[in-house]
Length: 114
Image: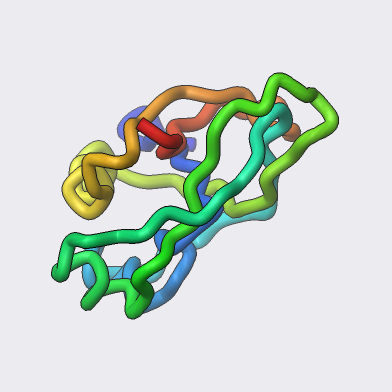
């Protein structure tokens, strides 16, 4: 991984090619990973631009479950700092970005329930 690269774990719409093209201007390459100790729910999105980009009114959102047996699967991506800022702009206020340790042992940014 290059020094100017950040890791972002996505379990939701940032895995969609159309969202990646709209947000980053390119398709991301990633690898499967998972977030232990979290569970996934659905959140209704009200931001029309995000709904238009993703094509979905309901997006997944994760929160800590307190149970290490719980796990949320997703994809680990390498982004530039500028692309991470673009991801911040895409996510609505119902999400906040935190650093987590993934099943692989990688530390990555992820958007969780605010």
